[in-house]
Image (cartoon, rainbow, N blue to C red; front, top):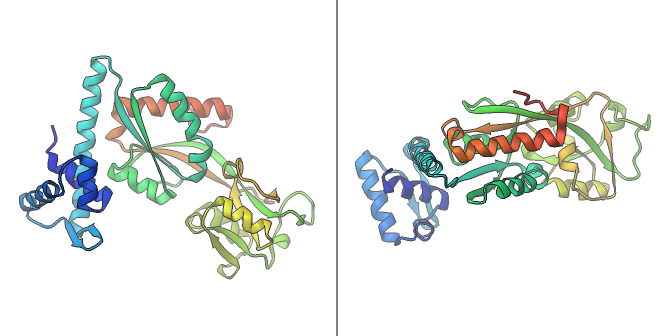
Length: 299
């Protein structure tokens, strides 16, 4: 099986201190330090910069990380295959999702999956689109939900088109009473998450000539609703994000429809692991049941 030093290295990266890595691995901090020092000696260069608050990867360490993670993931796959041959159906799946997927999809997906495969451990990591794609690329997660386009060398399945709406204070009504036009947003402030601004939200705002001078950034979707409710501006949120948000606001479509294309991404090595493959099938079935013909992934 894989060298224990690789597991120590990956754990230190995740935990950011030798002490926390030792606690996670149930070994002493000196054992972690010795393992890292030996791995650095074997490779011929330092992997970490040590400081008072913990450690951070060197540039060489960042290059090594994806290869170490792939070795560990491959070993995990081997263990799962061996367990499945024995009929144990064990293993683990690490899933990355952005906020609205974590709130609206993952609880039901995981509950259904746990009912069918109770011995498979599920971990969830929340992040933005770019973080999730990066995590899948280096093997930190096995499966991730993100938004297109995806330019990394990953397994990618388009899932649904998620319509984007304009969120307004309760007292606001567009001129035509039904949808938002350029005249409706003239000189209006818009409140959104910084991480959303590089994709479909930017396309909509650019079309409506909303400049940076009229942008305000918030922490999360619910805080956007709260600020819009208080009359501080308008928001832009997709349909999935609006499902479980509360506030005294109105939602209107734009005159020209916009949407974000949600996609499933998977690390190609990990996608062949039995537990990951079973989770991918379970996710697809959940979305087929939920969206029917609106589902983009038909293969």
